[in-house]
Length: 193
Image (cartoon, rainbow, N blue to C red; front, side, top):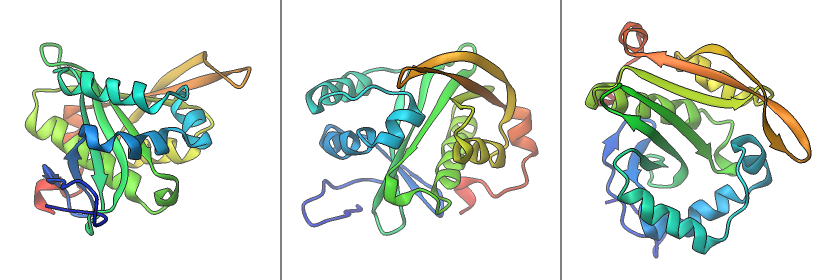
């Protein structure tokens, strides 16, 4: 059990991965996630719209019953929540899913994003019959572009003017990682950490 404060909910690390661990998101995490998702940088880069805590709690509750989506808190070795990752749109028959990643403002720029993405990718390819993972981000989101590239994702193209934010249209970079490309990576796997 890992606690980040005295009154934090107990969190079981379901997927230890060395530099970080992944723990399933629970309803008790709604307020924490709401704070991260309300950050102006996250709103812009994640392409999301600010929602109420009640709406987010309802979404978490629905997602917990959705077999096509898995959300995880990213926990540092001391149990501090640093962000979240998700596998969304899972199509096990087709072998596809999308990855999502968001770090808390105070944990950006410390390498936690790459560690979290690598852990999620290892979970997806190491435990699920997935063949293709995809990701999208604004073409100007340099940190996300770098994390995706370092984790082995290849840029497949650009969806021009696909996102409206702050009155402007933004291009989205589309990335993918295939199972054979993951197999060829020489980095240690999460289960080896």
